[in-house]
Every structure is written in C-alpha cells, then in structure tokens.
Image 1 (cartoon, rainbow, N blue to C red):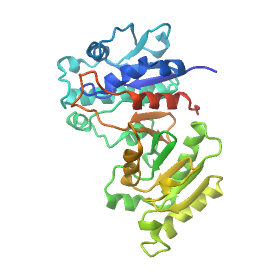
Image 2 (spheres, helix red, strand yellow):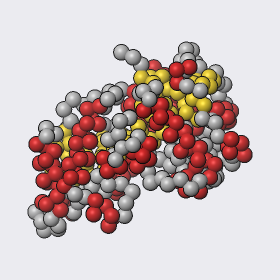
Image 3 (cartoon, helix red, strand yellow):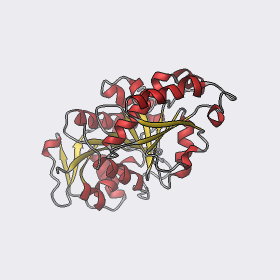
Image 4 (cartoon, rainbow, N blue to C red):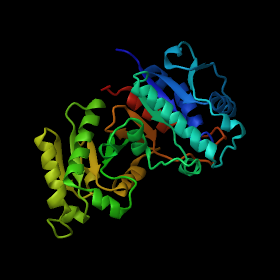
Length: 328
C-alpha cells in the first residue's frame, strides 16, 4: 500500500504553528506512518529550527513531485511571503494573517490536485487574519470556499482519542444557530458524519445525536425541537442506512459507550466537552468536502511563540489520524 503524503500548513508564522509543524514532521512516528511535507515560507522554518536547536537537511521544492523523503530530509513546499521579512514573533499583524491563509490555501490546492492525500493545518490567529482584511469564520467555511463546496454541507468533527464530536452549527450566535437547525440540516450532518467515519476506517459507524433543549426536551416539556425536527431527521438518516440514534440529552450522552461519533446541535455542546476531556488538544476535522482536512484545535499561543517549548502532541496525533484515513 502506498505511503500517504500529508501536507502540513504551518499556520500563523508569529505563533507556535511553525514550531509544532516542524516538530511533527520530524517525529519518528509520523515519518514511519507517512511522508510529511511542510507548506510554508522556508525562512520561517529555518528560524524556528534555530530556536529549537535543530539542524535541518531542508529540501525546498516548488511542486510536490520534487519532494525527496530519503534519510532525514525535511521537505518544504515553497510558499514564500515577502512581507514576513520583518516579522515580530508573538504579535498580531496583517502579514502573519495573510501568510497563514496562503499556506493553508496552497496545501488545499495540492490536495484537490491529488498531489497529497490530506492536509493538516497548524493554528492561525484570527485577529491577524482580520487585520489582513480576509473574511474567516472557521476552517470548515474556509475549506468549503476553497473546494467550491456548499458551506451548508461542511461541518466540524472534533477528534481526540476515540472520541469524535460533530457540530450541526458552529460559529453562529445562538439565535442564528437555532434558525439553522432544520430537519434537512440535521439529517445532512448525520450522513456527513457517517461518510467521514467510514473514510477514517470505521466500517459500520454508530452515531448518537444530541437534543437541543434540556433533557432533550423531555417529551416536549422543555421544547418541541426534538419531536418536530431532530427525531424526524434521525429517522430520515436511518432510512438511508445510517445507524443513528437519539436525541439524547447533551449533558449526559458523552458517557455512552460503543458510539463512534456524537452529533451536537450547538458549538458549546461539543466544544465544552472536548476541552474538558481532551488531555492535550483535539484535532478539528473538516468533513463534507472532497479533501481530508484537519486543524489543531488550540490557539496560536503567542505567549510562548519563539521559545522552542511548544508541545507538538496534538499536531502529531492529527497527522497520524489522517495518515490512516481512506481517500475518496
């Protein structure tokens, strides 16, 4: 079986993204599992290697086909950004915002062209992206636009250990999210979760679906969305062969066993659980697009950027997870 090629977009160059990307690409487990290639400005990689006291055999290429994974060579797909020459590490600025989006965009193009099997993106800084005048409301919407996918068919799956949590709505106000929760949308997110789990190697996924209201509405006592929207959506997905069940109370369902993924209705229903349970940080998998794309679900950590102390464990886990995934 061919070894997977994983593009690692190095994220905010003023944050810890390049450091954890570099450390992950050099990790023995990663190099045994796949061929990693960094997508970045080579000067950013060299600066972070110096900070970490690393000696690199750097191989900078203009196209993936020129990569060479022999020995200890570290491949970098050149995405040079002239504005980074005067970069201040640990600070927000427009140049860093533009660069982080450019790195991710170049990696996505490589995945769409079939040059890499998956993309893992290091954290960007949303303030820097905003300073650059770039609209960004989370990786799912960004990847949807970059792959010409309907944003309504793209969702976030948080992964850590064996736990996977899929969000029906994400970066919306609670009022907006409530308006978005329809039978059709809930059915689509359940089916997208089913397809993603199969790509991740789960042959017969079992999916538990959360309710919206306290105690999943408790038979209509606390709201009727479960009766009128969520349960019919579960039934519709089940009619198409998806093993989905619920709705369950979002405050109790994460204790359920033998469940491959949990579908939640609102951002905080999933993110609070993930941030309490994940020992390091979760990998955020964007599902529903033609490519496999994951990002590391923690910030750019400007307070420790440039110090060589950032922990790459979550990045390593994200790369390893996608190196095992099935294409298509």
